[in-house]
Image (cartoon, rainbow, N blue to C red; front, side, top):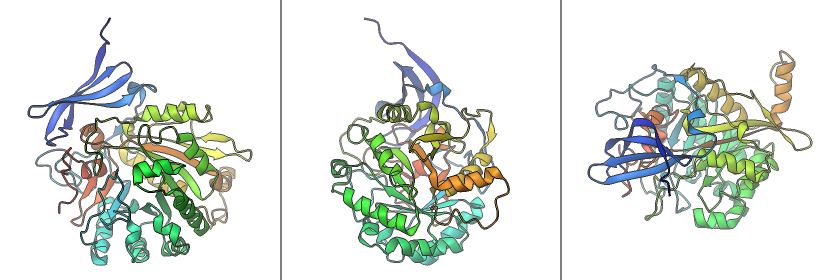
Length: 447
């Protein structure tokens, strides 16, 4: 029997040890159609994690960018990922700034990237106001996401949204499990009036078996009520499933159909395959559900209504971090993919891609209330078409976060989603949440 051939795609990939988080070198190795990141720690031994499995081929999933060198930078002393904030080696500006307004939560999910449920004090209004001002000063403007913990447990959430709007953020999004939005029909309208644009709604599946496994409770009915209340308020809704192999990875098309049936309130679905940081099972072997598997599963489960070729690498973050597609939902319910049929893979300035992504995200993920009553007359037929089509557009996207097993520092340096800190630092999402097997974090919980 022949031993399967392996091919080293890239040597000297910088990563960390999942046990001690010390920096070490690894290799990207292709074997039997799967690409694994293989590395060896002198103290804790060898580690291997599959980061890409099958078609489209790893080598073809590219979107080269010319590194962004502007903006405020922290001095690098220990090197990536220990000097994030952003350090001088980071290659992308902030597209979305995430502000955690509480560590408290009204759920105790078995899986939680934030390991929420803490008892620490919530940041007060003066601290948040200062953070919002620092983000604007350091980035020149970006999209803002209020997160936690569970942000809706704060009784002053409306005022916090108002502070964000006063600071100059045009697009303010709430990251929530939706429980309180389901229980309080008027809450969504109050947040809308305060200036909220969009809701990133935790939504893992279309039956309670999934919610019991991932959230520890039957939540499907509550999720549906929350969606109804948010849609009635005119807020844009993005459904965000955390994907775990064998739990909900056979429900992908059912989740998409559920979302399509709730247009125009639901603006799209953003899939997030589970990464091992924050709170995760005590005993496990890393089994990442990779982006190509997700693309092919969407195509297979939809009967090729969704096609693998529909999806494109991102123009903002590193190409290996995500994919996206945008559709027009026609009168007969059929989906027509919008945009170019090919990917422009010429090197583009990273900042140019980030600025474009900021605008596209705000337009697609925001509510459509009043969108057919523009402040100014459309300039041409194309602008008129886009205005009329907006309530019928729908996005599909996915983000593959990196954990201590899969971390590639080249990818990390292209990150555009940054967690804001009270001292002004903007820490890339995956390094902020990076967690050793024993639960130790580089950044989360430190001041």
